[in-house]
Image 1 (cartoon, rainbow, N blue to C red):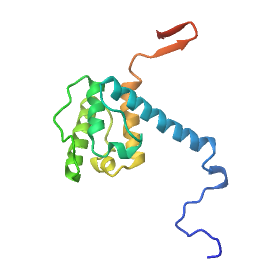
Image 2 (image 1 turned 90 degrees about the vertical axis):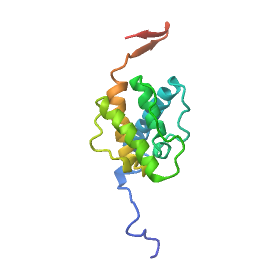
Image 3 (image 1 turned 45 degrees about the horizontal axis):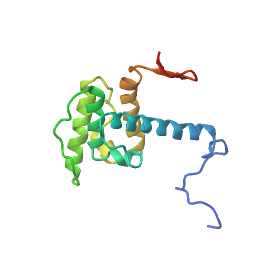
Image 4 (image 1 turned 180 degrees about the horizontal axis):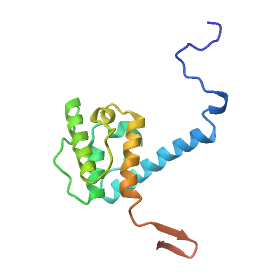
Amino acid sequence: RGGKAPPCAYRHAPSESPDTPQMTSVKGKNRSIYRWFDTQLKKGGFEPLPHQNANDLRDGVKLIQLMSVLAGEPVPKYAKKCEQRFKKIDNVGIALNMCRKHNVDVSLVHNDHVVDANEKMVFGLLWMIFKTFGLNRKIYTFDSTSEGKSA
C-alpha cells in the first residue's frame, strides 16, 4: 500500500500527461465537433446539446434531429421522450439508417455504442457525419474588410 496506486489505476507515461498538446488537441477536436453539431441543430430550430458530450445523444433524439437538418428531410416519426432502453435503441437505429441513406459510413457503430454513451464511438460517428456533410458544404472565409465571403 504505502502510497502506491492500485494496479488498475490509469497512469500517464511522463510524455503523456493530461496537459500535453496531444491530449488538449483531442479535447479541442471534441469541442469543435460538438459546436458544429449545435450550430446545425440551431439552424434547424432545435435546442442545442446541454452538455456537449456523448450522454446528450443516448436517446437518439438529437441525432435524428441533426440528420433531418443536414439531409433537408422532415423529421421521421420517433419516440420523443424515451426512458426505456429499447426505445432509445430504436431512435438511434432511425438515426443510423438516415446516416446510411446519405452515405455516412457507420459500419463500425452500433446502436448500443450510442445508447451506452461510448465516447470514442460516438465521437467517431459525429466525425463521419461531419466529414460527409460539413466538409462538402460551402466554406466561408472571413477577413477584416467584409463580414464573410464565399470561397
